Length: 85
Image (tube, rainbow, N blue to C red; front, side, top):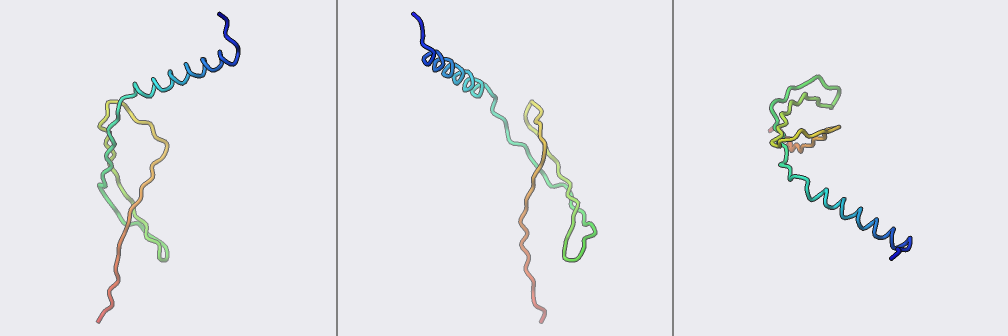
C-alpha cells in the first residue's frame, strides 16, 4: 500500500497536531502568583504630577520558577474635592 503525497502530508500534519495537543495536556496547572503592596513612598513631582515609589512583594506558590520579561500594574484612585464653607 503506497500513500499519495497529499494523503501523507495530511497524516503528518494530523500526527503533529496530536503531539502538540498532548504536550499542552501534560503541562501542570499553575497556581496564580500573589502580588502584595508592601509600601508606598512619595517622591518629588513636577507641576500637577504625583510620583510615588511602590514596593511590591511577589510570591510564587508553584514548585517551578516563572520567567517574566515585564510587569504591568494598574490602580484606580477616587478622589473628591470638597468646597470650603
